[in-house]
Image (cartoon, rainbow, N blue to C red; front, side, top):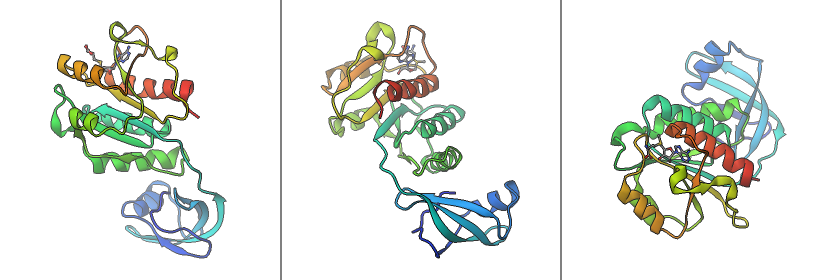
Length: 232
Ligand code: SAM
């Protein structure tokens, strides 16, 4: 369970809202049962449920199970998608080690599709399920041009169809650079956006095979391929 409070042996900590219901009703655990608590600062700790009610739970922390570990930076920037597709991308990107999930507003994106609070809860659940020690940040959606203007200069792999880019596997990763992938919306990037992207010195266009992938497939497959070819 992700607990955003200091974790140390002998401490008592409270569950976040919603967690007590999940533990008691969904997982059917009760007082004295074992749980594991984690956060990126303190790592993972064995704990027991000291008290549990419908909306509250308290845990007594025991020994440390895993120390905190630094995670390589891996940013996924994806044009905001329809709700179900976005939820799926956030869950899978969390499993694949994304440290930041940044919804992006493009010309062909509808603005109100990315709810950062709901998506953060999905990321937290996915991190718990895959035994990650951290939860990726899910940022508020930003317009593409603002994102590019404020970019830190790290190589940004932009998923583009094969007519517009070389295959990802042919690209060399600059030594030590963090991973970052940008995927366009269901309707694709507009011509002016593609021109803008190509003018930016940090943009690295990359194709993910000969077929046209749905945006959510491109985000997850692209992240997996990037991790496999260039990740730590
Ligand atoms: N007809 C649209 C176009 O002209 O771009 C198709 C958009 S596609 C459904 C959505 C996004 O997924 C694209 O903007 C691109 O980022 C990514 N994508 C889809 N297939 C891809 C491929 N084979 N290689 C790289 N990126 C791809």
